[in-house]
Length: 623
Picture 1 (cartoon, helix red, strand yellow):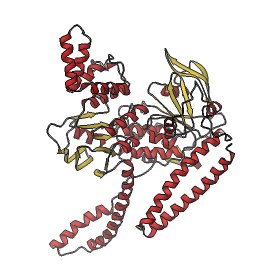
Picture 2 (picture 1 turned 180 degrees about the vertical axis):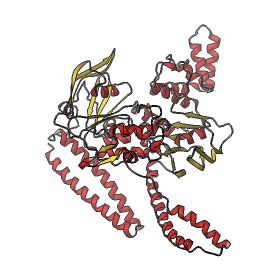
Picture 3 (picture 1 turned 90 degrees about the vertical axis):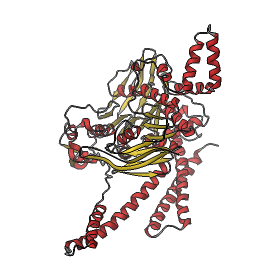
Picture 4 (picture 1 turned 135 degrees about the vertical axis):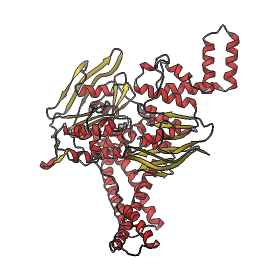
């Protein structure tokens, strides 16, 4: 059943065309993830189909009596209402019945009113809905129902708007970055909720695990055109690669044909017959296809980073509280060269406060923080870039100099640097206030990285960044030789970037975990009791925490290596089987056979190398 038909819509701002003649439909039961680069029209398209913005041409047609809800990045809520009043202000009939019943409970003397409310609860089967309503508020940490909306933080408002929408039970739900301002526990709960509930969804999100586990279709806007992929995020990645390869083949063929037709055009045919005029018209279409270029530049930076000395960052018995809220209690840790640590935990457990103490923005109540002489922090905060009126993109970078030093005595201009951060020459002369939220974050990230830090601290760097930019950032960080400390709720990003976690559990308890986010979730769900005591964060204390799971005879670092090898071997075996199945199908030809054969041999070599090391470590394990 078709819910929405988007017919030939277009949108431009002056000379800047976002998209033109776009058409698609949304059907019942679809859970669509919408993917595009920042600044290419994601939010505009979402606003148009949600009815909050008019297209320049075309139309959006809805099925009659369709109930639609839209979760925007900046929810429009009445600041004078309480959380509870906001929820019950919904037009959901069942919520009205629950509200009437709860009011009847407050007036036990009115037996007739109570009986009527009780019967209504039965008639509409509202008891189950009441349980669900309270569970949603609990999961989204909206416990203080009497608190006014005007007193809520931006994140709390977003969560309240989300709760309101989930409880209104719409037929079709539009979501703009639904996982922003949610902690990991909330995200995983929402993921499960959407996966099992019968919602029809159209969402913009950068959370790739969310796209993988919730969506059954990915729609991509690229260069003003829409591409649809009938599957989840992994399916999209595989098939996009195939599409790009096919497009390149078509472009190569068009180039050959273009050379041939160009020769014909240069001979200036005198006879302007209908046939030759048609061929001339076709020539310009061939020319356009032949000169089609992909704009897939990646950030490539070899910034001249100052070497780290032996002393980097030492945290000695640091404590921090705000009144009765204990965030850190006697926390200790000594950072080593090249460490890549991720910080996870619920909202309000002190993650951002911890980063601010390290960088000197907040003083600890007790203990001390010692920073090495060679350390140069690069601190990416959630506040983002400070916009100055009338400032252009190029001016922001030139505040750090017209030229930026690179390795081996080389340098690049501010313009070249911006191009590497995906700002073309035209975009560099745009006013900063005209940039999209994601483009501003990308520019801010650029200003942090060009200051040559050797210790990067990133507080929610993935918020509002598109998936293309996220991949670029990840590739840069994987090659970053300094220390890295990251707070993020992006599970995909954390799995790829960090190999060590600080888990902020509240009440000053911080668990030191040697692994990435998925490792931690597997460990948590394995039934192994969490042996966490306050400030068990030095390596020796972490060894004790892991004593139950440790293989006798292996050191702490060998235990980490042993577990990693076992994970790597499983992945390599899967890759090996995938390639062997390609050969078994007999569909490979020519260069592809050689390419896959080389891949297979590399995988076999890695398996043998890992197995040898696994046996070496196994021999150390005491029976």
